Amino acid sequence: MSEFPTRRMRRLRRDGMRDLVEETKVAANDLVAPLFVDATADEPREIPSMPGVYRYPVDDAVVRAGELRDLGVPAVILFGVPEEKNEQGTRAWAEDGVVQRATRRIKESVDDLLVITDLCMCEYTDHGHCGVLDDDGRVDNDATLAYLRNIAVSQAAAGADIVAPSGMMDGMVNAVRGSLDGNGYDSVGVLSYAVKYASGFYGPFRDAADSAPSFGHRRGYQMNPANSREASVEARLDADEGADALMVKPALPYLDVLRRVREEHDLPVFAYNVSGEYAMLRAADEKGWLDAEETALESLTCIKRAGADAIITYFAADLARRL
Ligand code: PBG
Image (cartoon, rainbow, N blue to C red; front, side, top):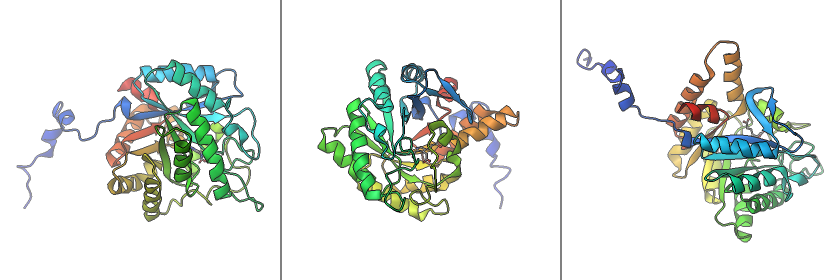
């Protein structure tokens, strides 16, 4: 028998009532803003495929970080565009590397802002892969771990609060945790890009960071979008290796995976609302087909509803302003 007309769901959707019974709320302090710091730029440069997102010289990145903090965004994640790239990605762990300089300056001059550093080699290698190559031109997993250890220590020495290994190397969390602890950085956290798919939605980011692989693809180390059980294994391995928090990336097409990781772990789960997810909404907005900020807020609400504790998003500043 139908509960109608006794049960009328619309009573819960009246003004006032709707807000009172709202299950999921997105706040500025759930958001992490990506910041691209560019050693080759002398003024902020807008990224063509990501309207409203810029590559900043170090000085401007510091100013931008302060603005984000003032808007109530609690954390930034830094990506570097180095002055030069080479086979070994040596600028990734230089004491005066662009991310190290930006981290030092932001920690010195912006109070109460967490600095997360993306820990990967693809922005620093001339071949654009996330690790060093073996003689056959494949990414050498175990050799790469030694590099990740160095990068982690250099980022921690610059003052990073959290390092975020994103290259999908097996054993990366264990390697990074070990090198941090071995060098006196046991209070620096590890946010693992534990569940990272080989996704076409990273296209605009690769423009932004000049990090598209010069040959081949990343399918040899990033996950197959068709797989969900594999995400459970990835997340478990990284949790066991000592990750402080786990990430699922991209976010919107992978909400089922996000929910799965949420249900299987008690660690904080981050979701990365990636560059392609940003670019789609901006492009449609430019055509007048939808409202970017309205759909962005809806997207982030759904990402949080699916189980994210925190969301990395290029909409952070615009939404924090609204929230
Ligand atoms: C580096 C890295 C990538 C992104 C974050 N860290 C690119 C990639 O793996 O190709 C993508 C972020 C985005 O698209 O917003 N490994």
